[in-house]
Length: 397
Ligand code: AFD
Ligand code: MN
Ligand code: MN
Image 1 (cartoon, helix red, strand yellow):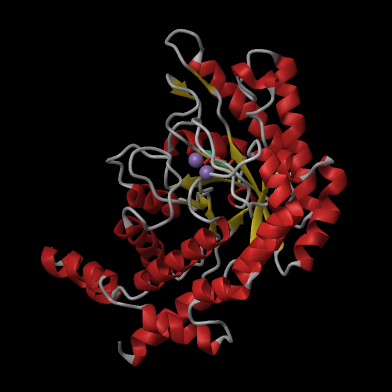
Image 2 (image 1 turned 180 degrees about the vertical axis):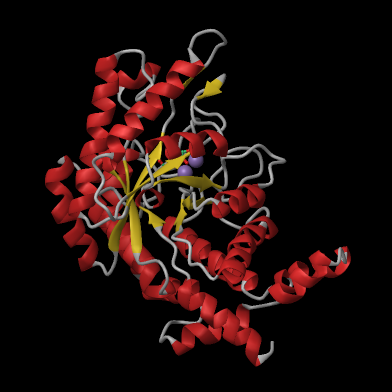
């Protein structure tokens, strides 16, 4: 690696921060069940303590996305305490995730429910989430809706779009100047016939209708198999509508696997579009890089460290693309040379440069090994065993 390449890698690593999901530390699973882990977090304090470990060893994951119903037992009243707890563990609260999909009232939808009383209930929860964000000094309110239908003819699709535009506009009107609504899309699940906000175009349109502080959230697991995600990213960047990502990887659907574990080149190409935009425009887009993974089988803290390390490496690789040469080759239709600009960067082994960056920042060069040697896992398994054993019905997988 040349000195210039190391300089590019270190510059990228200095810029790169990724947000952890509180729900990644708790016992979760698939709709076919979950395997309880002895050391899994069962309270927001334990989740923040675990996230603090990940940030302590990686140095680039200082914020934690939280889920209102799962992490704020007393709603807005517990916001200040949750923020103080986060600080105690060396992290801060990041995106606030309202939950308008678990309550029985939302059986036929939330903001698009045919019943105006349910729509008002969902909006009230979103407005409370905006208040919580104010108390935790969070910029982003991250909205995912399960609204949709399972059978043809059971929903008025056009009317439901209009209801979303109304509800999101009312939420947008209550934002602080520094706050944003991130509208996440997903093609299916749990709805199986139509999902109201199913793709980037629908999210774009309802966000635009809501107001200038509403953007699109791209969850990498929320696309059909052949979709070109980096093309979506390029279009959203061009219109300043890219609010952020929920990173994970997938083999078949919304599998929430570890980032880069199935198709690292795709994540690299997404980062490349962002780096290419930065180089070409000189602008710094305000993008929330967030992880949305919650593993059933891998040890949770180790998996989050593995995820953060993988994201760092792929972002560092994307910073190595020679944008000047790429642009010249593109203009001249020198296809192989243009493609090779990406492949040369992607196949560059950045691991030693990343290890050197960690040493220069006083971090362990191998965060996973350092965590494993810390004794934290054994300690939390002892401390949390009983609560998790109860959750497992007495035994562990
Ligand atoms: C699920 C949904 C969606 C959402 C996440 C956190 O598919 O990605 O962002 O839960 O609420 O993964
Ligand atoms: Mn998501
Ligand atoms: Mn998802």
